[in-house]
Length: 140
Image (cartoon, rainbow, N blue to C red; front, side, top):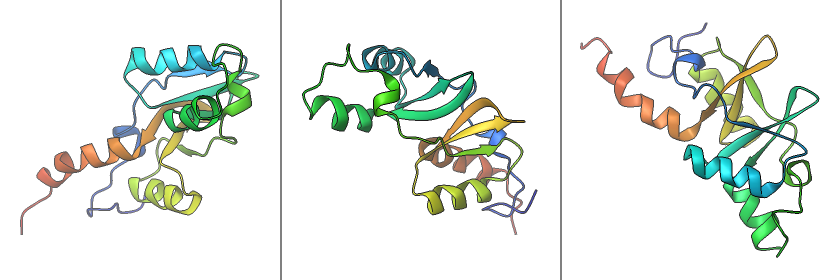
């Protein structure tokens, strides 16, 4: 693993939320929104054919359901999800994750181990983790 943002070797796995909250592509948007509320999160990874295939965020629901005046109980996750899911392996560094987020213009990454979804990395979790890593840096 390469040196990370603060000169530390910090893996994605040490910061990700695990397990990731998931829903099936065939689930209704209403049930996805209920999972967001129940878990106090802003995104759910969508699974299709036993593999991560996309993501639905609060913003997706606002733009594609509420503003469009659609019925969240009749629209399925696959119809509004952002796809494909941008993902990163759990053992990669935070520097690599930040570069991927920047390059792909996303705020959330699915985290995988050997192709299986094991967590999610968000901008918020990255920001929240910084004080912990700054405190562990050796002083000069």
